[in-house]
Each structure stands twice: as structure tokens, then as C-alpha cells.
Image (cartoon, rainbow, N blue to C red; front, top):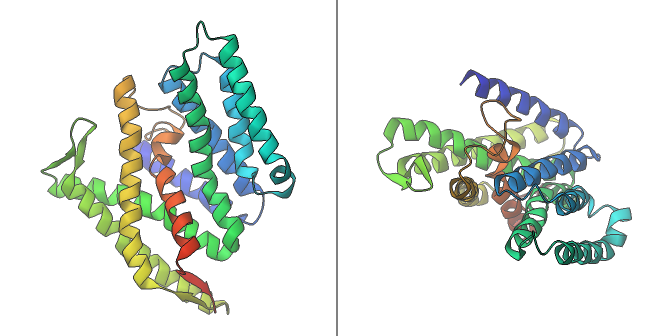
Amino acid sequence: MRQRVISSLVGLLLLAVVYLFLDTLVLNIVIGAIGVIAVLELLSAVKCSKYRGLSVLCVAISVTIPFAQETAVRRIMPQLMFFYIGVFFLILLKDHQKLRVEQASMMFFFSLFVPIFFACAVFIRNRFGPVIGGFYLLWALGSAWLSDTGAYFAGRAFGKHKLAPLISPKKTVEGAVGGVITSTVFMLLFALLFDLGMNAVGTPVRMNYLWIALFTPFFSIGGMLGDLSASVIKRQYGVKDFGNIMPGHGGVLDRFDSVLFTLPSVFIIVEYVSVTAFL
């Protein structure tokens, strides 16, 4: 527990630094690093990291995707994706005797969906700016992590009915309900504080608390889905943790698996629903 608390405090400190420089390429770089480490952890978990050529290619595209909306990269992105797919299949053709199609397919899938889902943090910032976009980013992170914390304590206090016993035996239905309630209450409180803070600095915003109350439970459930999805991979491949880069938590993906689903969920919702805006 002590290691988990220390790692969490260090993580919150890094998050604060990134948030301070949210309107710079710091966010792109951090998201790129998280995406690369997560992809490498997945490739290692499914026993595909031994294919060096494709692993390097997967890392290269994972680094690039968080910069996809920046002008210089955006201009060449279609050509880059064509090149990536072409080289991917050339390597498969070259190594077909030792590299199976299903392994290559898994590597291709991981190398795109993980960095794209993480890169939604950059897409949100670029679309809505550092202030409103920053709120949406914290909404995505808070919905996942507060839900995880609430589920842990509610599960320990009230848990009786297993949620997914064959995938994650410690998770309970009562814990899941507690996680949804915790994330919703605290995100409404955070929205109120954000509202008051923006008014205090002379930049009032319009907050739609009803939308926050309605959508946060879905984001919370999305976070649980991401967690369980990662657990399925670990369960099928006999892996306890994806890594050990974060003492007490495991690997990067062990900490960010729930965020994988909440970031794109928030990005999609706020594109069509006006949750907050400057007055």
C-alpha cells in the first residue's frame, strides 16, 4: 500500500506539471511516451516483442500518432500510414515462416488502437483549448481513477457478488456501483470548483451539471471495461502485471488501462454535447 501511495503521489505531481504546460508540446510528448511504453508492455505480454522489426515499426507509429494534428505531421499522415501498412506486410512476407498472421495482426492492432485512444487527450486539448479542454481531460481521468478508488473501498466494505470472477476475481458488483457513485459525486464537485475558480479569475464559464451527472456514470463504466479488457489479456497469457515501472501499480498499462476507454468516450461526447463553455 505504501508503494502505491508513493507512486500515486509522484503520478499526481507529473500530472500537475503536464497540466501546467498543457498548451505546449509537453502533452504530446508525454502521451507519446505513455503510448510507446503501453504498446511495448502489450507486445511483451502476448509474446510478440521478440519480433524486433515489427516492434520497432510499432514504436515508430506510436510515437507519431500523438502529433497527428500538428501541422507538419498532418500533411504527411496519409502517406505515413500507407508506408506503415506497406512495410508491415513486407516484414510479414519476409518472416512468414516464423511470424504468424495472427501475431502480426495483434501487433498491428495494438500499435494503432492504444496510441490513438491515448492521443484523444491531445485531440481534446487541440479542439477545445487548454482551459475547457483541460477540464474535459480531468473529467476523463477522474471518471476512471475515482471510479477505481471508489470501487476498491466499496468492494472491501460491501462486496459480496462477483462482477467477473473468471477475469478479475476481486471485483464485485457492489464495488462497481460504489465506483460509479464515487466518480459521479466527485466529478460534480470538481465541476463546481472549476466553475467557481473560473469566475474568481474573471473568466466565467457555463457548466451543464446535468450532463456531467448523466455522462460520468457511463465514463466510469467505460473505465471498468478498459480495466477488465486488460485483465482478459493478462489472464489469457498468464501475466500478473504488464510491467513494473510503477511500484505498487505494475506497468503503465496497469495504471492507464481504464483511461484508454474514457478518453475517447469524453472526446466523442463533447463533440456533440455542450457540457461547458466560456460565457
